[in-house]
Length: 77
Image (cartoon, rainbow, N blue to C red):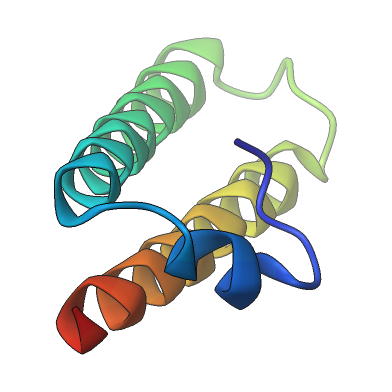
């Protein structure tokens, strides 16, 4: 599920179980991206474009926002 505008409405339609599953998936995705970022930055040295870290940080921030929205929806149930 891509989380865009109107997310709150679509999350309200999900059951607690579905929200928990979605939350777990997003948390796993966050951990995977963070691990990938750390591995890439550690092992690539100076061979990466300067915006690589910024791209990872933006992606992590987006996932964090999605996690927050899912958690808020779950807290309302």
